[in-house]
Length: 276
Image (cartoon, rainbow, N blue to C red):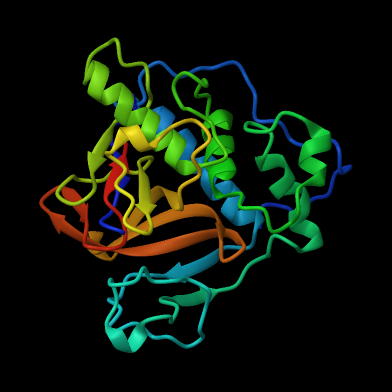
């Protein structure tokens, strides 16, 4: 099992083109038995995410400063939830785009984005009909987990993050940390829980509380987002995480972190759960 779902308090490989219909499927024989304690599995998840970040040109978004201190130049399309930023910044984006990579609509990126849908929409015709602007961040995470060898039982692939976060909470509530819990990820509050590479940092919007499992009826697409934690920098005061459809690309987001001994913690940001 992978360990915890991090949900903060709101907390170039060669670019290549392939025929439009020949998507790069994620499916392979499941190879994961114990994600929480298997460093090899965690590394495979991290490596897969990093390779896709490389394919998109290493885009980096700095979200490590507070709203009060954030450099809003250039302005980018990241909306701060109402009430979480000072009134002077209401309606303003937060963060700094440090490096710009390929965008989802760029010719070189279109094939990769279409590929990410394969674990959640197995029909090529349906995938081909999706608009470029379709929200693909959950599909990206599902694709990475599938490529890393997690089965659908271990990770609930879905078009909405809230669905696999909810599944992790449900399994945790039913089975706890026992051998009967087959989920690769368990849900934990992000704040106060040490993070590790391979965990997911999950953010909810509009007051949604991940732990309210009753809200996760199949088909519910509540606004939310998850990034894959891939490493740390600056002595643990920065947490590096990769996600899809962040500023229309596969992007590394930089979050503020805090080190305490051997542990690194996510400081107050935009969410309220972590799965790891």
